[in-house]
Image (cartoon, rainbow, N blue to C red; front, top):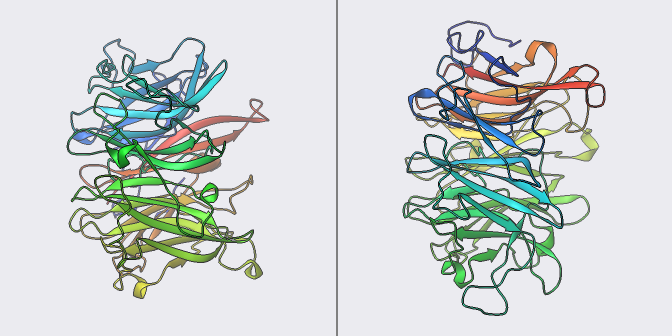
Amino acid sequence: MAYASSAVQAGTLDPTFAEGGVLTLPTRELGGYRTLAMLPLAENKLLITVLLPEKPGAFGLSKVNEDGSIDREFGGAGTGVVEFSKENTYVDEIVDICGLSDGGWLVMGGYASFGDSGIYVVRFLEDGRLNTLFGEDGVRWLPFRLEPKSGGMEDGPLTFSWRDREPSAQAPRSSGNNGSSAVEQPDGKIILRNVVNSGSDDLSHWVVLRLNPDGSTDETFNETGSVVIEFPGVPRVATSVKGVALQSDGKVLVFGDFFQNTLASSIYVARLDATGRFDTSFNGGVGVVTVPNLHYANANAMALRESDDAIVVAGDCWPNPDQGFDRHGLMFVLSRDGFFDFAFNSGQPLFSKLVDKGHDWYRCAWQADGSIVVAGTTGRGGVETGVLALTARLRSDGSLDPTFNGSGFVRFNEEGYEATVEDMGLMPDGRIVVGGFTRRPGAVYWGRTFGSWFIRYLA
């Protein structure tokens, strides 16, 4: 149920979507029990990814109509599901969806097969068919090992693996420029983030890389195809890259977090120029913005404001261990060139604890009027009962917007069961869609059954 004071105001469930604003999986048409990423489409449709329990090692894509029904015509088979699988390979880890300028999209995730593992990047056309001009029949396989460089050179560019699996990462991933795992440039090239094994020291490093439109590695990017994200005085093996975004001038924003020591951590935002080199003009010549001396901090999402490339970063932390173990949502806003925005919370990071036991912020998005929508999950971040999905809207100064559900935030727990947020996005008309995962009492999977839900809020 959702806690709302009115059936018509912003922040309340949209009664025109599914059953009173809530779509739950599985449905009669769609048997997938879990979704990890979604992408708002034109005509206020929604693309969703689902794992297929009847076909282990495969995933499916479906379209949801504006009214919450499954688009049975999608894919042309009459089922409404486009399936993807590879023989003798598990491709059921879905990490991200990235919309493309041709109307299609990329789906990213992890794969594993006998003696090999890494990530896959699958390129689909708008009608759900594979774009066979991309990679190997529509797929770029990026194994966790070195590959020969084109031209017969002995050592090649780094290859990639989803070594540090995240609860759902990062994007949303659901729109093309919101701190996702991948983003398309205007020329069709694709910026990705991932983990590599350098081969020389056998250590894993977080990198940003660029692919050509056909899926081949763009070796003009940093002259190697990739750039390791590291900063002076910070061990590079401790640095994570949570997402990338593309500014209007072609520069690439990178954000993530790293540990300074066993307790203190920092969140960072850095910028690369169009050639893949670190942009030292960011933050007045420093080249990186950090929020240091946090306690177990996570940078989970980033979004750019279309009008001026202003940056919002959302995450969570435990501000002070002496104050208990409740998580606080964390947000801050930067100008396009890396200066803290004094119009937002007087230029300081904003720590939020809107409910008992705390919460995180897992996704964020700018609305057209400059408001910021965030979504996350309540609780302390561990395995616990009673967790809820939490969605809030803040004004441009960082204060809660009381016109949103009468309080600035709204909670949701599907039919009283536990509900955790996996993704969020804004529909073309501004309505807010949040997707998540449900654990219900039952006798399957460690005493529980699983499902997914989507809710749409009025904006």
